[in-house]
Length: 113
Length: 110
Image (cartoon, chains in turn blue, yellow):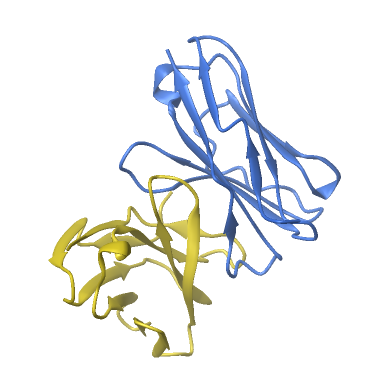
């Protein structure tokens, strides 16, 4: 594919609602990462998928956050019962599995009102 | 959790000057990478240095790695206004995962 794509690019939701963020990695890339970035801050690791292995969920901040990767390709990050502190840019990246030269999507800017 | 920590947090220089950013990390790594981010969106890969390398060049970029001190530096020579961005180091503490630091915000004044 042309690159990593994410949708939506912007999402405004009310506190308490559930949201789904989508990431389409580069075709053939076996590793997929989700990060969260609050305004002016660094990247907070959320979750990492590598092929058919169990994902590394160690970065998920609470049980309101979950992610899945279907068919080893598209990934969906779900945030249930959103809170205002969930407002951030959610970034997805993919690599060929060697953690070298990650390709990032443009991010989804989530605003919880 | 973050693995790398960049310093300074912010750096402001004049066009033409050199910019140096540092990254420190905590555990053993296979590789260390530097990325650039414009406008708070997706990051772009700049350069990778392997744990058995000490220095690497790419255009106006020079990266050094000192595994004994668990630190790396990124030097941008002859900076341009277009270099204004945030710069992040990324390490692979678990082998295939990638952890980023908080970044250095570089401003190059024309």
